Length: 363
Image (cartoon, rainbow, N blue to C red; front, side, top):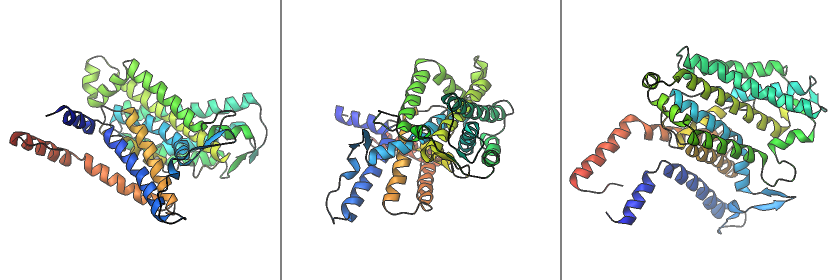
């Protein structure tokens, strides 16, 4: 085997190879579609990759995708850790996002239109929302770690009740916030060209990368996910580690809720975070992470989240109705689930073993 073949084989076998290829394919589909069915006839259309500066801010398809993917990236990071530690998913993150957004706006004011508040109240509202998100994580984590309830069943409680509690807080109304500074988190911070959601997502990603890779926490989470009983025997507090991952996931949901509320300068408890738990789970799966827990790759989930947002943007640009977008996501989920199934993995391993025995090369 020559050096080039060995390098190619390592690249193909890398966990991030398929997530990156998936993202590239989605982008190429957009370019091909715009080139074939553009308003100016058939011609090479590369406007998808164009980035321009308007009023001191960056704009373009890529910037739009990264901007709208910011909240999903944060959710995907939290979901990655819960999946890795407990071999289960937190399906309540969408409802928790709506609940935290409702808490934030209610702290700002009791009227149906919030027009004025001080900086101190603004900070207090954000802290209150993040605390509620963390408390939701404590609730979910306690049920999973200490009561040994299956993660999907445990988080189903807040999946059902969280959005209802948010509706109670806002009395069923859409509450608007008439203050320009409230929109900053969902658009642009003053004098900064990058979208705010992208900046927040980058900060969360970098901090978590450093925490997970420069400390033993990442190794502990993987150990607990692989074998909870064995990790407890060697001295790890597996229950506390699982609890902490759910607390962090709840905190991530609160940040996503604040971003989504800021984008629309209001709180729509019925729609904020709606179905985003499925996108977060899909991001983890596209990132090459096993939904059975254990070893994980944070950047794989981040790429998966961007891919999901790019797919949604591409479908909408193709005039696909927003109500039909979940159908295409469902097809993608089905393909990933089948590819990751034990039977398919067993077949691939057996095929490679037979080829190796026969002296053949298998891609």
